[in-house]
Length: 236
Image (cartoon, rainbow, N blue to C red; front, side, top):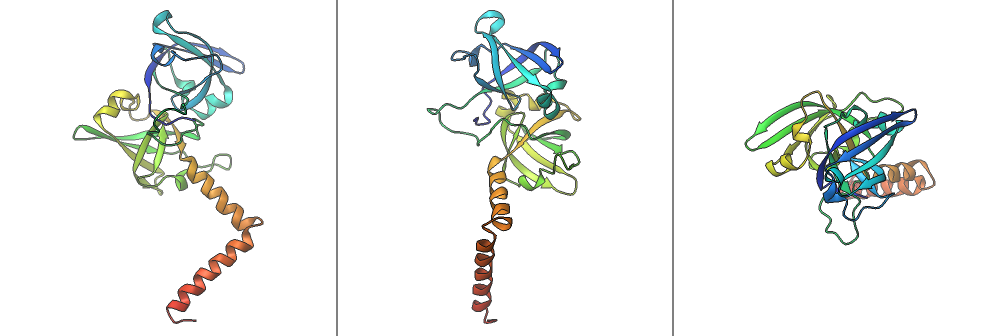
């Protein structure tokens, strides 16, 4: 589990492809390797990846992760090049103050940056989600104004949503612009999106109640509410 508060910016120092995916070496990573162990989870641009090898001192500290083809297909990491910066966050410890929102670092899809507008010292960004498919339905039901979204692993607050255009916006204050990669990306670039997991749990619970064994209970509950409202209005 992660918080969406980026700890450090590393950069891709090498990429090694194989038939099942690829290995990324991420350098300049010493600040997050002090307590690292093989097998630890690190969120890289919002994708939870497993450390397969690391060195705390050589070249400013580096670690390696292996990306399966599923990860390359689901995220923007397959488009990263040597020299690209990456947002890094270690898995949340039980002793730390919780500051962002619950982020699993399981990327749902990618979105495209379609707008960048300065607003004083802040920066407004607009993103467009891809057309939904049967395999990857729309994520718009989980995006609400003032709700949370993780973009490239960064916990951000949604400023607006346009369902008809499949777009949503966020605002980055100066401090955030300096600490993450998002402000450095240009229009047309892809970003990794993870919607708030709480919305997914609520949706599944409601569907289960309406279509499963709890359907009659939910129906009875709704009928009682309707009857109560009608009675108060003198209709019943």
